[in-house]
Length: 514
Image (cartoon, rainbow, N blue to C red; front, side, top):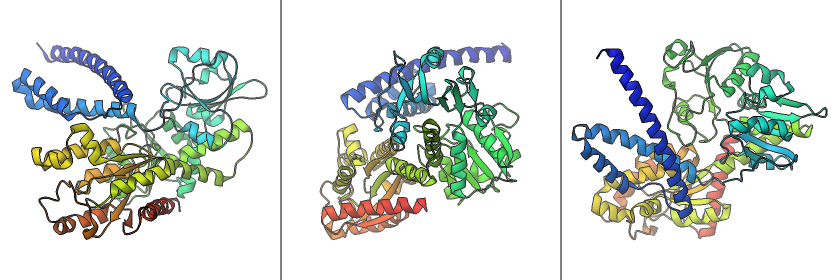
């Protein structure tokens, strides 16, 4: 066989593999739904090991390769299940109305985790709903519904345009509509309020694009909107796509970019660890903007922080486009302070409170009380490990070794750190792994809960039996201090310490708003 025939054989195999992989993912979604109903957790390491052992034995010559492949498959499966089991409130999806009732809300295909209903509930009183519509039903929906104010998200921002009577200049230039409103003449008019969101976000950051080289990652609806925005601000615009003349294989041509805008979903929940570029190579970069807002700090933005490059997520853009949407729907203006207030509300709603500290410092007890006070979900990483393994951390370390416990702990932290608006108590040694801290900071504020060593409660602590508590503290204290964005001393009654945790958390958020 020649090379072309061999490659053709590979292509045919790839087609079969993708089809089977998609079938597997569909079953994974069914498993996630079962787990949700049974209130089961995601990670099942013993089952994963059984699968790995069984499959490895089928082809001994490729044991290593099979294990590598399935570790990746398991990670993808966990991420999908996490998305299904997310602790974000599952908002109701409304069916297409049978009668011509006024339609306000969001049109898209998959919307169960949207923040738009909360956002609009803070601005106005119209009944903002979520409308999941399949592509085959898009025409009927747009032609038959009494649309008063309808936001549009992927995959329909461009597809809705042929059904509209008028389109704003910005929307037409960007080929992207994210708001439809019927005017007094009965005409469906399309707008692009994402543009207004970008305008506000860059104004808030005090960043000028004039005469700057702006690199935009992505050529979809958000990327095209960002390009129009940057061009209108007199920037030199480079749009990067996967197959265009400027692509991810020849980025070295643009390492002199001064502003970088990520307009792709790469790095978005639940794939928080992904990024498209190596930011360190862009040595002229002055500012990074990522349109993603979940997680609050993508891997791209985390790298910008490491390099001390000013950066911003998409939360201000989300708030501003929401306020602009309300202005168009209601035909009235809101002060800029309204946008800032919405931004802060969104930030509070999404940001996690994370407690770190020595074993027995009170993280679980105080974390539960903080969660009750703020009406948030609560996670304890040690408890999550126990629920998965039916063994305490101390038992896992005694029976399987500390390395296995740290592995399990890391997987748990990776999952719970993707939640939003939660309170998280970590194990005493979680700070030792920088990847744990990086994951936790993506969506949260880390508070070091400090307590006198003589006051620590050390019953059933996994490492308290083998290492003196003073020695353990000396080993870890610098890790706690380095990770912490705030410190609270647990030296008072529980209600007072709880209040102090909340105060430090709010102070930390406020420092990011100024």
